[in-house]
Amino acid sequence: MDLKFDREHIWHPYTSMNNPLKVYPVKSADGVRIKLDDGRELIDGMSSWWATVHGYNHPKLNEAVNNQLNDMSHIMFGGFTHKPAIDLAKKLIDITPSDLQKIFYCDSGSVAVEVAMKMALQYCFSIGETKRKKFVTVRSGYHGDTFHAMSVCDPVTGMHEIFTGILPEYIFVDAPQIAYSEQWDYADFKQMFETIKANKDEIAAVIIEPIVQGAGGMRFYHPNYLKELRKTCDEFGIILILDEIATGFGRTGEFFACMHANVQPDIMCIGKALTGGYMSFAACLANEKISQGISDGKPGNFMHGPTFMGNPLACSVANASLDLLMSYDWRKSVKNIESIMTQELISAKEFENVDSVRILGAIGVIQMKSEVDMAKIQNDFVEHGIWVRPFGKLVYIMPAFIINDADLRELCRSLLTVVQMN
Ligand code: PMP
Image 1 (tube, helix red, strand yellow):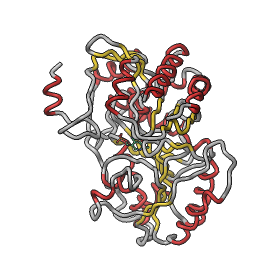
Image 2 (cartoon, helix red, strand yellow; image 1 turned 90 degrees about the horizontal axis):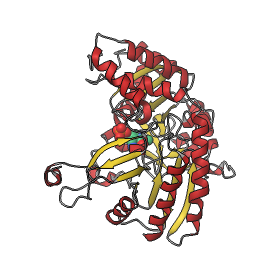
Image 3 (cartoon, protein in one colour; image 1 turned 45 degrees about the vertical axis):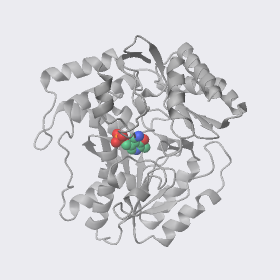
Image 4 (tube, helix red, strand yellow; image 1 turned 45 degrees about the horizontal axis):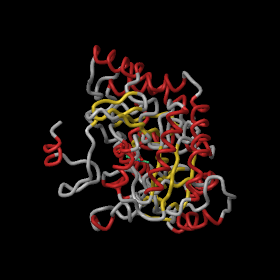
């Protein structure tokens, strides 16, 4: 592989062109094994950033793509519709919170967040609440890298200072502090309540990742926070947007993380594991209130329509991925991953360089006391036969649901060995 060319010409995620981190040439991937060009095999701990819940190269998903290829790989969604899009919408309406009945397909998680925010604003304008232009969110959140999505990411890790004056300025509240299984105390929600109350006439929507804050800190917060948020949004007529892009499709132990709190959003974003991680695809789901509010108002149309909206290949593989998820007891698999990760990772709490360890569903997080040396730790992981990609102080894994016990234990043990060395 021409790594020199790659190094000189291809931008990789979150890097500089001057001194980028090393990239490893990968030849293929199958199940939870990533095969490098030099013949080495790595056990995958990342599911390609939450996406490949069924592992790589799955025969059923391959078959779905291949079958669809023979009919059409793409067709514009303006003026056309097709069975894969309709079948998928039926399935999504079935499995997502029952209020969500209207689906907007789009091409990536960040775009789904843009669509959700645009829907919220357009709804407010359509019903005549034209003063409602602000969004409220919590610190340590992450919603994507496009501009509106970035404006609701944590202001520090989202690098707001670079784009000051360009990024819209929204309202931030401290991140929830009470962890998922700690004792609930309403005091944790008080700042959010007071902030919403103080700005009640100017807020269009609150946007938040339910239960798990992902790339902004890998934090698991208490379901009652979300319940209180729903109540407060209802009290003040504010839309609740839940970003389930990382948490959706079983990752946290419930089909969608909002189900830990039994909360229905007005708008919900999904992506990543929607296609089993096969390709970029996402959706934004809305309830009747939002869709009617927009459609009854002026201009009535929702003004968004990406070129690859409803892409048939993506819809087909998403249909196959959902069928696969429904075909076995994924809850049992996620519980099993959670219990093995708990057994294997908890001892890291005693390491002197580790601050804390937390596990929820198929997500395991080791928070270090100081930032890791990415170049070194990445190399150590590869040398130990596993693929883990930390950021900052956070070393975390989210394996595919199909990982077997032996591979998972090996992944966890090698992870601990490397963590201890760093
Ligand atoms: N929201 C959340 C919660 C995410 O984790 C991500 C991706 N890491 C996004 C939005 C953005 O998705 P994408 O990278 O597909 O644009």
